[in-house]
Image 1 (cartoon, rainbow, N blue to C red):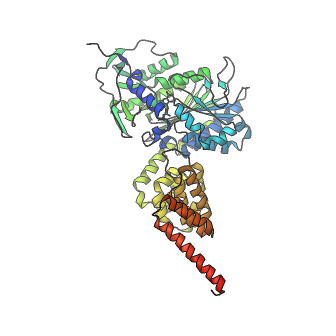
Image 2: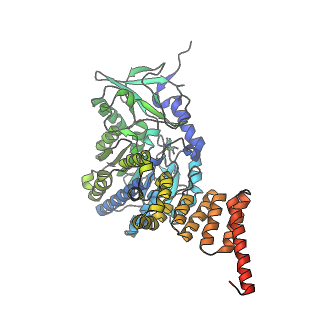
Image 3: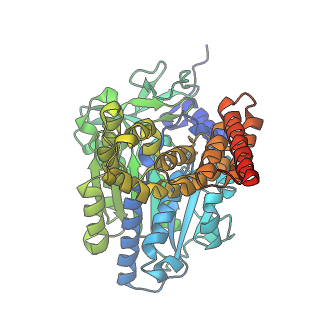
Length: 528
Ligand SMILES: C[S@@+](CC[C@H](N)C(=O)[O-])C[C@H]1O[C@@H](n2cnc3c(N)ncnc32)[C@H](O)[C@@H]1O
């Protein structure tokens, strides 16, 4: 019988089907299967945007002629939800430093053309495209080098020997989603684990299943010939990892490191890399089985990213690392080509935005509130909303508690909600799987008697989510409260078109007609 072909782990069938999943599914990958909140929320975006602006100021202060705008390249941008939040913050922050804004280009990239199509037609991105602040690119972490920008048609490639504008790379939840290789270290001897080429993911429909790769049938180990990788910088990191105290199997993020080496070669020598991902700072400190467990998300996989390897790479490139581990994720910044001591503004921003209350903690706090939801007070939920920068996700999760608390709320709570609910609307980013946050905002505003604003929220709900009888009905109620009775009847009628058995809508129309008859009667008789 012919022996099955054995290949490095990164080349087995698991990663082929994983890649095909993202390419084929496009935006529908995020219909409850692939998690994204933890790496795509407004708080993290605000932290990144501030760090980016500080980094650009540092680079500017360092001087030197450069050609072309500074680039922020987001790898594996997926839904685009995070890009949207970062772009909004960048516009706001650079408002105070106009020439920074004029010299900036944010590039959203992915390997799924379907994602690029989704972004291109998403109205949220139109203003940034008009300003020339945004561009899109197909960029494969495993192989791409230069950037072919889709909108401006510009090619970004460094000319040898020429100084290049600064480059910021955002890699949220993407380096753990590109294929790693599999090595073992035993008694100081490094070997590579080869696995059957046909190895596939077990069937998994659940959003958060897992798969241990400690024992794979048909795998074998062999000694590692030097050099295992080109470029040599990646090979050196493998040796660094092997020299750490690790025992047993570990996954090595060769594709991620190769991508960074290529970006340095082809785009910019100095790079600020911002990463938020499921991973480990010191792989040697956790059990082998945990290092070798893949997360499965209904068709794709994720590994635990080895942040130690990223740090070794950054330091080997004359750079630096700033990392923070929380229970859920690691958030980290790496400078390639310069130490943070040479970037004083950046270093301050890192200390403030990743060091004081790290974005990773936010998820734990929101999670805790979810678990203890029925007991949450409005005033405490307001603190949570402030902390999350008025995140639509929090309103979606706590809508019922917010609504139930309104009749008992004091002026502090009502005042805060009235002042800030528009920020939730500003943070909203439409996805096909998104809940109708605008409807919820409308209900809260209506309950607080802000009928005009409630109407605007319901109108936004109609434009994103289409006509729903309940929304049309509530618009009728708002118009009635604003004494726009004809409009009110119009909305109630539309609600009835959607749902002919909508008794309450019929009741409102009957009541309005009755009121009109009475008014006419009073006018004609002259008596009240
Ligand atoms: C888990 S999602 C993360 C999306 C987003 N960054 C976030 O935090 O929610 C991984 C993303 O990486 C993309 N991706 C997968 N393989 C890639 C590769 N080789 N190069 C670039 N992007 C890749 C996928 O299409 C997907 O959009």
